[in-house]
Amino acid sequence: MSKRDFANYRTNPVILESPIASPTEDLGEDDSVNVKMEGLTLAELTSKKKQEVDPVQTLRPVESETSAILLAFQAMKQEMERKETCKEEISKELKGIIKEAVSRVEVAEVRIEENAAAIAEIKSHLETDAVRADADRRAESQERDANIREEIETLKEELRVERRTGRLDEPSPLQLDHLPKPRFAGRSSKRLLQFLKDLESYFTILAILDKTRKRYLHNFLEGNAKIWADSVCPQSKTYGELKAKFLEDYLKASTHWDSLFGLFVADARIHVTDCLPRNIVALEIVYASTITKTKFSNMKYEGRFCPIIPNGPRDLYALDLYGPLPSAKLGNKFVLVVVDVFSKFVGAYPLRKANSKNCLRSLTDKYFPQAVVPKRVIFDRGTQFTSEEWKKGLH
Image (tube, rainbow, N blue to C red):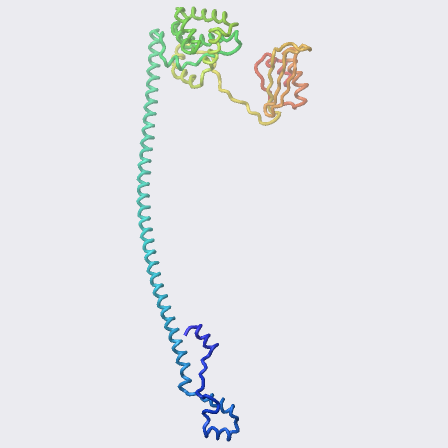
């Protein structure tokens, strides 16, 4: 019997009707006697008869209730069996899924191990190749260094032989390419003289003959300068003639900068610049033995630029003179510029004459009261800053 049937049964119980048709139909003589004896009314006797039910009829609702309960129990049993069946099926499916997942994980682990082995093998190959390449580079570098050293030694030996025999007319390309380049700087009227002076210094060091001097001059020229050299060198048999022609053309074209030689002067300033440190080292390596055996040069090589870094304000002052300029109303032609290298505090003071006295007066009376006396002062080697008056005034 289900819960719904049981609830209906409790709310609507089965009522069995009595077989008594009417209150007076089934009353016999005994009943009438009983009525009379007990003093009961007819209605009371009828209700009493109804209460005396037949036992067979009383068992009918019990049997129906039992059958309903059995049916409900069977339904519950079938439901439980169905659930057990579903549970077994689900368990089987889960076991299959788990088994398949485990197999896939095992396959993935095997593949990971294979990939790791392949990666390790590739890495070992790469490391081996890198080691081999490094070894090859080192071997090539050592071989190249050995060849360079051998070439330098051969060149030095050739120079010794040529020095002993007096034959040093044609220097090798290494000599010309690695020589320091002469400077071509300064005022326009002195650039060429300084250029030729530097050439003469190198010629003296290397004892270069006249023929080689022409070639050396031609080697460092480019652009319009080389065009000019190509036209002048064949006409000059000696270096003296070339030098004279050089000076003559320079003086003629010094005021005409649009001419060919004017362009040559501009190009020469670019191409004939201060030499690099590596060229100086190459010169020392190649010609050290030759210079020590013949002549010693008193020319100093230019040192490296080392900036002076101030430690703070009022530590280092830099000063310089600017001018001469067109004369002002008060006759001032120069400007003394003073700057604190750290704070960049600038002072500019006009001067009539660029002498030590005026510079000291502007510095001590005008700039120092505003910026405090410094620990150090940096300046060039002008005559105003190297005189005894300047030194005493600063101390």
